[in-house]
Image (cartoon, rainbow, N blue to C red; front, side, top):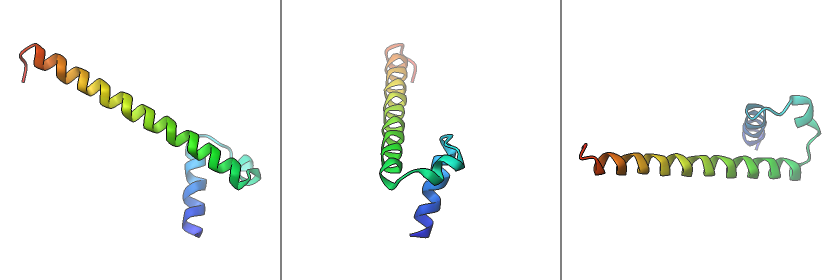
Length: 65
């Protein structure tokens, strides 16, 4: 349980939320922030995968293997 708490605190600090603000957040607010951050990361990963696939397709169409 303690590990999970500090892992969450570190994630919040990493995304730029100040320690003073973190101390005041409710569990529900933390859950919303973490959910939004996860959705943003998922979208970025999907965009990167699409871009890689697009580059690979362009290279294959040009005859570069």
